[in-house]
Image 1: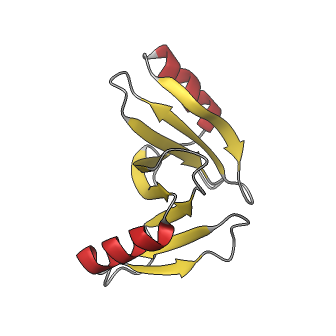
Image 2: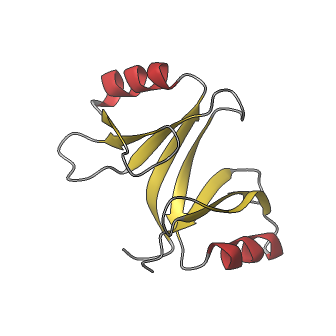
Length: 122
């Protein structure tokens, strides 16, 4: 995959079952468990797609609900530093996920929420 492009989206919700029903009925999306994740995460696959392109994260009400696009980058920490230098804000600093996954959540200067990640393959 190329870096610096949107490659994923995520819906964080305190009511994942409701979100899955809504988006499943609206867009025909399918949902499946992500066996590689240690946290509750469901993969989203659009009809006719060969692979998942998003996920639903059950927040348990611990963070506000959100829907964000996620950009794959070569270096999450460097991207966070560049975002801050450009007037953005780091909301969730770089976090190690399962395997080589590293992710962070940011705000752009207008307050729009987005995510970045690296999976170690870039």
